[in-house]
Image (cartoon, rainbow, N blue to C red):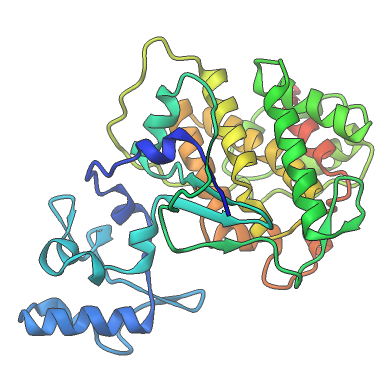
Length: 359
């Protein structure tokens, strides 16, 4: 399979900021737990006691590395002490993988980055444009792959038809290429023009919502009715989507000049290029809605006073990294319609993205 990636993947190098070890709880398999424990015990490291069987916190079925003072207990001076003392083979697979995202479709490997990593975020900000590369014999940056072309799932195209995985992915890449080729420089204008062209539907008018909606830490129940009224279809409660993400400080080198709209647009294109949302539902309507969902979350983070780079970083955390996607998108076997009516719900999210406050 040819490797499809962006120049950001090849340019990324860890700058040892330790952010990933602070922000994320780190899952560890039983084999990895035993390996780490053996190395620690042989080195007479007191932390071996923390790794004993039954001692680790379990989240969503995964044991988690112990934490201290808001970070992984093995973080020392922004470096992983497991890596420095015992070698790269000792650290959990999640640590070796981050921040790489690797997806396997029916005909290609797609490599991208998580923008939770501040170094990846800087690369995104400094990139002059969105670009992709194809390496016929390229080596993927990680062995951890999300398989998105098996026949155990239903694949749904933008018209709501069930199609084969091959037809689904051909359609997806056509959609991605058309989104990338749209001329509108404003990200919301491009999303709306793209959605209208691909679905044949007109975008709804902006919803008139409570004045403090975008700065509140909660979802106004009345906003659901207003969204339904604007979109002309059933809307949904976005209480889970409105939960705040705790801010994390980091040093960010902003390019000068800096075009915020172009930065947000590059982020949206990266998420369409590496559609991690298909891990939950192989549905092109779902991706279209999620592109508007990303824009909504960025706007929400900006209204809460965050810099646009922090807003994008928090958006990536909220929509891409577990456990949020399972809870938001009805994964793990939950019926999709129990959370959101995805038939044409891009209209609901478009009405929200373009909404203006009432007074």
